[in-house]
Length: 486
Image (tube, rainbow, N blue to C red):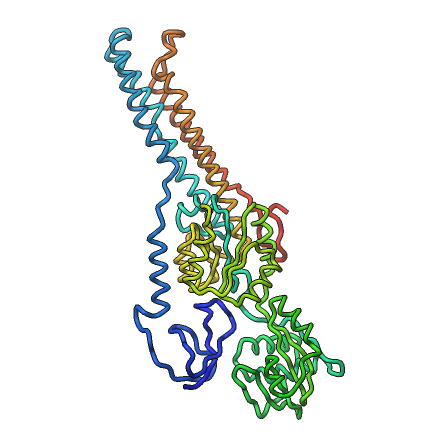
């Protein structure tokens, strides 16, 4: 019994509270915004939706395979080969070498072991990861494990949540168009005075707009909220009505003059509301969840890197597709719950594509865990951050392209290190084994072999340190977005 508006953003991602009346289903853990009601619990404990989300996160995390370091693939063959080479060197020089045979063979075998010591290969990966993750932290990108740093370079599809990720997650008033004969400032003042009596986020957006313009709000009397329709009140001797088009129709007020405007607003992902003063249509007001200022540039940067961009959201399809078209997003998946986001991630993987998902809410946690690399917005919930592999501390989507670029640079650096360590050591093994001795009489002293081996490690460390000079493709300045180095 009873009625109220309930904030279900933690489940659906939709910022606008949902009307609940007798017979409606409410979800445990969501937030009652206005009014009061009595409900009957049908699912408790492990059966609740929140518990199911937690289980999905655990399942997705458990299904992830550990990423095998590239160095393991090299050393798995290199080390046994070196041991065999050392044994053969000892045996050959013991049989065919000059006297004293044992000492001569032992010195050459030791030189082979020293020059081929895989110290540099052991340093190649951890040093690059350490420097790369440290540089990432300076850029506001937190890699929670080295595996994510390696996986991110292979990503082909970037899937994004809408509310709080692409958008600010807080409704604001964007438009107010008045009918001829009405003055904009007066209409906004009267409407805001009425909406100040409501706790609805849309009402708060209108009040905030009036306050930003420094408008005074008059006293309100005879306030009446009509659930699902709008509100009515008396302000300064005027009868004010604010609400959806159905509220105006209910009051016998024709909204046809704003028909085209309302359609245009809907196509721009804005929610149109109407205001009537003394029984006459006065204005149409648009409220929307605004796109973050840097989002368009972040999407362009991802496209420039050759990546496909998808949007997965619990928001309604019309709004989602409008935002998708506005931002140039390649694929839009709308009206999905947390388990639907997981299924969407699996569909995006078709053809063996690697997928990263970017989100900020509890409802995004299963998808963050399911994706090959989950990226959480640092301003989001703790559950989302704990489910992710990478966290954008600034909460800015520009960090996604920066993280991918840094991942590619770090893995390229690791490959350079491994090539140097392997090629350098492998090329000197024959010299240490004494292949030049019959021709030039040259042998490699174990002391020189030790110096050469140390030089290899120094080179690897120096190459890894170059990552400290990595320049982010994009960065956020105090003002507008600028290119790194710009």
